[in-house]
Image 1 (cartoon, one colour):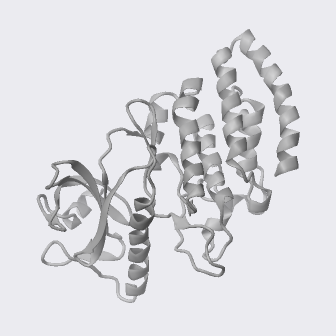
Image 2 (tube, one colour):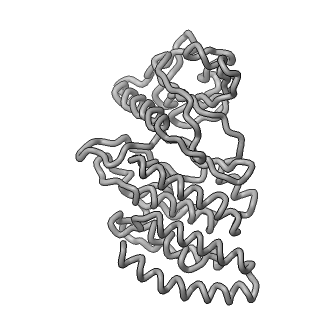
Length: 329
């Protein structure tokens, strides 16, 4: 949070909904301020997310109430607030060990609040930087495969996350992931013609996220997952989809990292297809390719002669399986 915006945050010890005591600012985004708080009834530490779009909002003289300070944008403000409150509704129906736990949500001070469990961990992007991108079997099994399972669970509940990226995933002390921030999430399938508030993240959002009336589905989250895997294997997200519209020359991740198995490299590239109808549409292939990569790295250490032999063996398996992928796609 920029220093000149600290004055916009709620003051320490403010009580919300007669229950939650604000303790300190934890983080800030373009749309919200997140505080560390305390449940006065239980004493439990919580995270409190307050709707506060920086470009539109200001604080009233009471230092609590929020209002739209940009003339002519009150309609946009209300639309964003409605979307923020939906996050609480969606999160309240999700109960999964790898999803941040919902506590409460409510409206007050002419804005909205979402209360969640307070987690201690490290964001995935920072975790990978500290560990040279954790190119090993243990990371796949302990962190990446649980992420796949979590996204699959969300889809089965009829929800699209729409903002999967390393900065929205926390890695706990035991290496397990915790999926955060459902601010872009929507119910799926959406009614035909219904407008969607557009939220995008450069490098991680598929083309359909740039249109209010586009057709979206699980393949949209798969694009973001593939972009996350690109970041993991290459150290950077893929070229933003808008830059690939007229000349799509996205190189294989193997051109950045030779230790990535051809099967996984293919699935990542397939998942990053610009056109959604040509994209990998099943998390099953993402899971299987990661399991194969974990097997390769567990059996043989990258860079050794034994690794090269194992790589050749699994390349043959990939070539046989990749034909099946497109038969069932």
